[in-house]
Amino acid sequence: MEDGNMELKEIQTLEGHSDRVWSLAWNPATGTSNNPPVLASCSGDKTVRIWEQTPSNGLWNCKAVLDETHTRTVRSCAWSPCGKFLATSSFDATTAIWENIGGDFECVSTLEGHENEVKSVSWNASGSLLATCSRDKTVWIWEVMPGNEFECVSVLQGHTQDVKMVKWHPTMDVLFSCSYDNTVKVWAEDGTGDWHCAQTLGESNNGHSSTVWALAFNAEGNRMVTCSDDLTLKIWKTDDGGMESSNDLASWHHLCTLSGYHDRTIFSVHWSREGIIASGAADDALRFFVESNDGLVDGPSYKLLLKREKAHDMDINSVQWGPKETRLLASTSDDGTIKIWELATLT
Image (cartoon, rainbow, N blue to C red):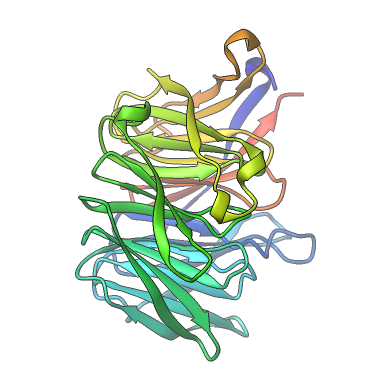
C-alpha cells in the first residue's frame, strides 16, 4: 500500500440524530453477501439509530430508532459477537441491553450500579462477559447469565479519574481500560474468579502525558494503538508467547509514537483487519497509517498513508472499520452526522 495509490471516497452522509453523534458500532454478524451491513449509532439526543445498507442501490437507511429508554446522552454502543444483542451505555448511569427480535429491538435488560455517567461498553470475544466503565473511576465486569440476566462479577478500582473506554482483547479474556488519569490498565482474571490489574501503561513507561481517549487492537491481538489528548498515537506490542494464559500474561511495551499528525485531541482510533490504522480528532480530520518497512534497524515504524482534512464540520468522535475484510469506514461527529467512507485503490 503506497501513499500515492489510495483515495478516500465519501459514500454517504447519514442524517437523523438531532445532537452530536458520540459513537458507532458495526454489527459483526452482517456484511456478507446475503446479509447487508448494519451499524448502530448513539447520540446526545438520547437515542440509538440502527442503519442498514440496501443491497440494490448501496444506500444506507435508518431501520430503527431506539428511544424512551435512556434519559440522557447515549455515549457508547457495542454489538455482541453473535450480532443479536446491542449494549448501549449512557450518562444516565445505566447500560441497556437490546435484543433483535425479528427486526424489532426490545430492551431486555438494564444494568445499574455505576454512580454516574457510563462512558463505554464492550463484549468479550465469546459474548460471555460484558465490561462497562464510568466517570465514577470504576470498571465493572458483568457475566452474561441465562434469560438475559447480567451479574456483576467484579468492580475494578485502580484508575484515579474518569474511565473513558473499555475494550476486551480480541482473542483472550483480558480487559483494557483507558482514562483521564493518562493511563491504560490491563486487567486479568487469576483463575479463581478474581480480577486484578496486571499492568499499567503510564507516562513512566513511554505512555501518554494526557487523557487517553481510546485504544484498538490489530487482528492478531499482538499490537495495540492508543490515542490521546496529548495529540499522539502510540503503538504497543506484546510478545506472543505469553498471551495464552492470563496467569502468565505477557506484558505490553511501547513500540513507537506517532506525533505531528493531528493538532487537536485525538478522540478515536481503530485498526482494520488488513492493518490500516484510522484516527479521528477534534481537528475534524481523518488520518490513516500503515506499518512502514523502511528502516527495520530500529524495529517497525508506521507512516501516514492518507489524510482527509475537514472530513466533518466539527469534532470527530468515533472512527470504526467495517467488519470482514471490507475497506468501509464509518465516522461520527459533533456535527450530528455519520459518514460512510471507502478506502479505495486508484486504478
